[in-house]
Length: 68
Image 1 (cartoon, rainbow, N blue to C red):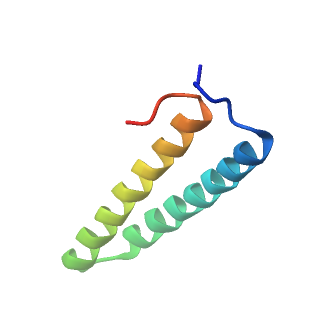
Image 2: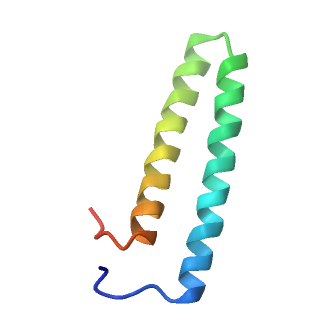
């Protein structure tokens, strides 16, 4: 249980951010599949990991887990 429960506005903001992140992950997946250059692929893989980390933080906050 979070120390400070999220209010409705914060939950709505986090849900919108979660949806934006999931859309970005889908876009990155599709462009990674189309990419052949290794340097571009490495960069997109880095972006993909960063986005996944942000998604995990947003979902943890929504679940009421403490920040790392």
